[in-house]
Length: 350
Image 1 (tube, rainbow, N blue to C red):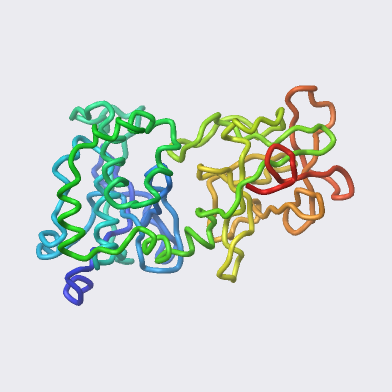
Image 2 (image 1 turned 90 degrees about the horizontal axis):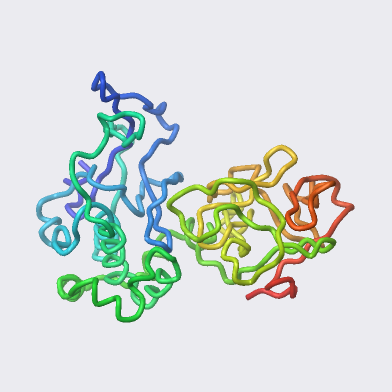
């Protein structure tokens, strides 16, 4: 019925899991209890699962979808220059939304998916993916649709080969130019504004970024992981380390929607990642950002010279007995310690 009502509407199911030994479904969520239905687009051209209270799907995960033959042909189908695996779902999602269509999920539809698992040989791929094909495919999608914001993607190390003259390796984009002209597709900023709960209220377009310096030690909060990106979760603990403006994991910005309000920010996100500061017991770590602001452990702000959690019920500080070069952050009374948010400790935003 969704497609019959609007042939430009693409429909996706809730994705569950497939037991490859019994060929049966598992991990189906209870009705109305979420599940894997929708993704959002990050600046390194990754897609990340999330949930909200709308039917709209900013980015679909891949080949599990229903689309009318008419809309498939009008939008040009797949980009035939892409190879192997990766990026086609981003291209398809953007061309659908920007060229006059929409993507929604069917709440009563479930499809079991066989996930790749290293400890289960039956799930290993039986085909070869050319090295670098995912990066090239994602770059083609971004170059075609991001417009003036495309250069943002080149900040990420995995796309270094496409800087400058390297963009010639992406191949011709004439097929995209034809589609955009023929269908009068909207600019990429329309997509960002179409999903304010992600890009504006969720904080993915921050007006400023900053470092978090603990005043007594002069050190800065440092996220584990060592590099920008959204593909893999960082390992290790969040710590205090010597402030370094060139360290990508010492930069943060406001993020996560304020609950019940159409505005940012109720938390603090590590720049160019999907990680937000998160209280775990009496320690500080990072976790995947809960962009709707519903995670109490991610309620952070810098106010009155304090790195405050949950409106000031507890404040971050130096852990007693830490070393001189790497220090642990823990939580205690808000009467002790002090913080500054700025560029390499200068107190100003960037």
